[in-house]
Image (cartoon, rainbow, N blue to C red; front, side, top):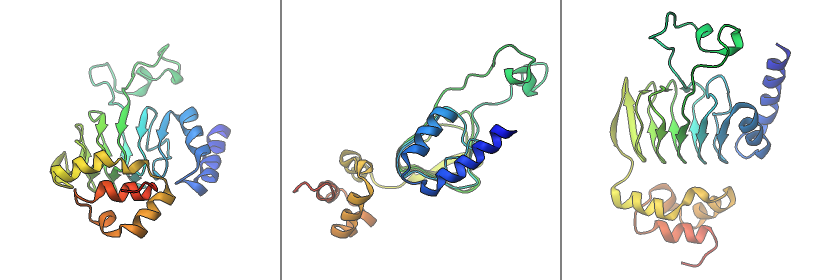
Length: 208
C-alpha cells in the first residue's frame, strides 16, 4: 500500500514536466517497463499503459485511452488472475508473457480508445479515433476508428508521406520546431511533398 502511494506521488511530481522530463522517462522505463520518447504525453500511467509498451516522440495519449497487454486465458479452468499471476501465490511463475507494443512517433490515441492485445504495432503518424477498439496492427499515417477499429483513410497522399519520412522531422527538438513554424508555417500546418525537406533542413539550421 505504501509503495503504491509513493509511486503515485512520484508520478504526480514528475508529471510537472511531462513533455520534456528525462528523469520521468528513465524512471518509467526502469520501474514500469514503459519507454516513451521526448514530447510524448498522456502515457505516463502504469494503470492504463502497461509494461512492454514502447512509444515514440511527439505522441498524444488521451487521459481515457487504455492499452491492454494480454487477454485472460479462456482455455484454462478459470479466467481469474490467480492462475496466471505469480504475485497471488497460486502459480509459481507468471504464465502470460506479452510481446512489446511498438507505437511510432507522432501517434494520436483519442479519448476512450482501447488498444487490445492483438495489436502490437501502431505506425508513425497514425490516428486512433475516439472510442475505437484496435484489435490489429495499424499502418503508418492511417486514421482508424470504430469497434472493431477499421482504416478510414490515410492522413496524406503517398508522395507526401514519403517526403515526411525522409525528412525525419520528429527528431527535431522543440526549439527547432519553433524555428520551423516561424520560417515555414505553411509547410508545418499543411505539408506538401515539395517543401518538407527544405523546411526541416532550415529548422535544423542547414541551408537548403
